Image (cartoon, rainbow, N blue to C red; front, side):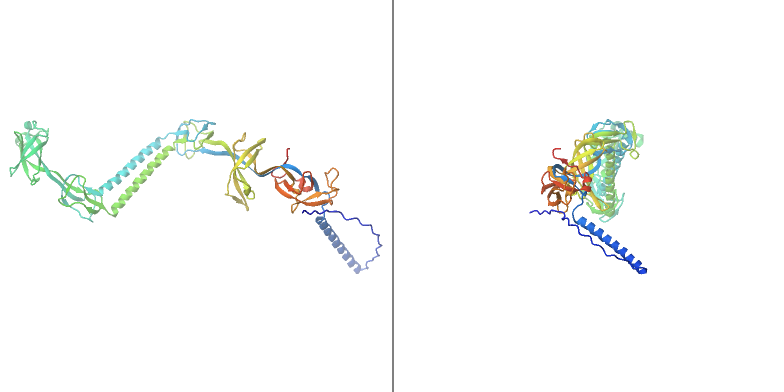
Length: 548
């Protein structure tokens, strides 16, 4: 149950009969002067007490006439908003800057063109970059070859098929390039080179059968002509001869110390010659290292490429690792050169509209001194960054309507939406603000760079029963004028004592007006402090009368 307090003036009292004050005389002399000073001090104290009591009585009692003005409870559209200012910018912008130096060969676009992401904008002369790639490729090949050679040389292999005659190293030995490792010989087949008279040799050819006679034992072995020389030599006694090479299978006992003669059909040779082994090789190390393994012994049969000895050790592995690093560095250098080549073709990093074109075909650009080659704006949206007070942060959320105005375009209101509110605040002098991003899709005549004012609509109530916010007193009460309080036209306060305090229930507001949900009816009058009423109009948004 609501309680109201009716304030009525006190009833006037009948005038009292004036009493004659007794006469009072100050003493003369020094005593009289002292009394005079005392009387003055008492008068000052009395005057101060009277002023204090009067002021206290006025503030604790009823309002004086002229301190309040009447207002009417009426319906208004109330909008609660968070306001701010800022500058609109493109949702995305890009300033193209060159990463390389060179002559512009192509620039197939103009200011105002719509370009798509990845579209060619500039092509620069890339001769220097292409040469750098070729050099990097050669360096990589050289580094790889050095690595492969060392890796291969750490395994000592037989150069051909044969029998190991002698192993010259053992496990744990340290070797260097040129150190003999093993001797390998192939004695399964022998060749003998013999002189034939030139006229006879011209009748011979490779593949013919021959009979080889071993000197001393006179043993005859079948052979095959391998080659016939075409050059004449002077033989014994001055006769012209040609060399014929004949191959025979070793029965097992022949060595390079044996000699022989031969006949091809009815053509006999003109001299003798010593047998030659098909292979005799001293295998040497091609790299430095420690012998970590010996795979053969004397008498072992080997084929071409068979492993004889393995090399390793700390020094060899360290050298191999160094070469591996060199290969990787060369590969990275090649990749860097190839990446640099891509910088000579400049494409649009975003889709948008070309705002500036500062370089054309035929111009030379320097990546250090050059400014922006071109500027691209994505104008599909405009963006507004606005700082929000920490006190208003909890009121904001994505998707809220934002009403935007610009002094450059008077009379127009543009609509945007809150895209996001960052919680990365900035604190200055103990006060924190947070950046809110607002997007405008339909921005009409707004251009990037224009200064705007923005109201983020937090809450909007239509046709709300409302009064000026200044009329609400502490405890959610208002002063309601009673009969005789207001002038006949209701425009001024005649008797401020004829009022009552009334409790009300408040709803939302816009800073200037507040919604009344109970306690007052439409058309009721309330008293508003005159000074506050004179200063109204500075709220977030002016409330419009409902339907007006």
